[in-house]
Length: 365
Image (cartoon, rainbow, N blue to C red; front, side):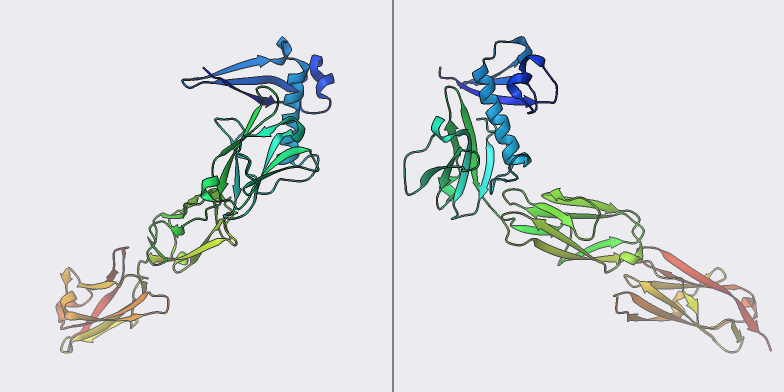
């Protein structure tokens, strides 16, 4: 059965005196991981360098790979980064390096082996592929011209015996949608005094986009970002929240804005007079006003233990911020038995209720 052997690296800054002369000032190599793959299973074998058995040529291959990674991704030696490369994948058959390119553009795939020592596993087609050498590093590059969906495959380059490096080519795909969870028509409903979940989601996209909340100290997240506003106050009512999605597949960030709309408890009602008084021959007429409710609050009236709400009428006005102002007027015939009883007006909605009270003064003739 045919086997495929892939050499990978484990790096650290531990010193082994037997190999410092071979590795120079580079990070010291402490092991070589040999992954053997067949059709049925994969085996992992670790050979520690200080156990011996590794030839100088094998160290040279490993060191070449190490230097390539440092130059390409860590930006240590050359200060240059290969365009369109995303550092995802380690170049093995099971975990190829992922590289992205826009539809119709030229993709440049760079191998870790020098041009004179390697070849690419593609059919010769001068209309689709060409090979060049990186002038800075002398590593071989495969140019995939006019990238199309059919080109989204794994490309391999081989060096000497048992040396392979794999790159998965992907076309950029922009996110299909950016939205706030549970928002309707860019409105996010919540209730004063409860926790409100803010969750922005980017659907689709290749590579997965980064998502962020504008003017927020929270770090960007991949694909979606969420946080909770605990015990949200009415100060957040009609406040906009802006979410951005960033991706190399987008010419400019995708943006969506949602407005927080809160259900609000009414403010404590106020009587229209400092003293509530009348003569027993004249019906009592008194009003209460409540501001800031959403949805509209309803009023209940009590004199002593008696519910007299049925003798009241209410009028509602809508403020600029969408909250409701309600004025309720009670007209009720009283007598001397109502004197010094407590009169209560109570404003309520689904968020809560608030009330105000005064002592009734009934003057007798």
